Image 1: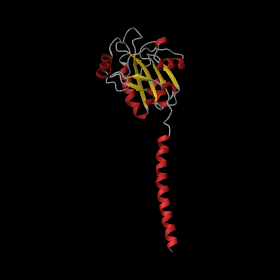
Image 2: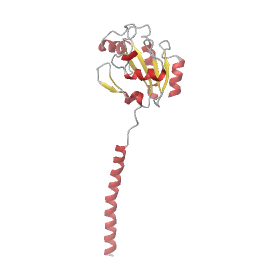
Image 3: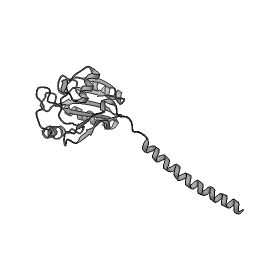
Image 4: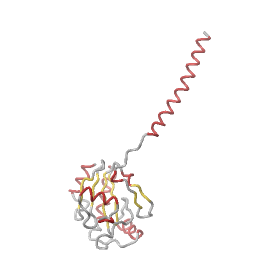
Length: 194
């Protein structure tokens, strides 16, 4: 009987030692699990417009992304309103707009980061991510736009050119400036990608 009790105590002690070890193994496995890979087209970092804090575009992996080159003094500047509307409409479903101010066309974005940010946020109520002014065409194009141009064969021809990227890293389409944010050909593609 004493032998049986001793065996039971030994078995209980062994079980209590192996159970915590198993419990610890699960979190370690969870920690070593690699996060979703960042798609090649988003493997870039840009300074945020309002404070120049570096932003890794990999944070938008798995979302439907609309990349737009913007300008403050352009006939298309009012498209900020439409962009904000579609961002509000689809943002909760995994959609994001990335705005890139550029002075490449008609010198229509001559201002400082503060001036551009004031126009975006105070005049148009822009809530989608905006990045520091950069070039979007030619040999000086920022690396994201260089990839988008290569993928579509289409270089921006003016301000408010749009590129749509799917959740799977595929560049889905190019839209010239005249295609407004609320145009059914653009919103239809966004809805299909979501």
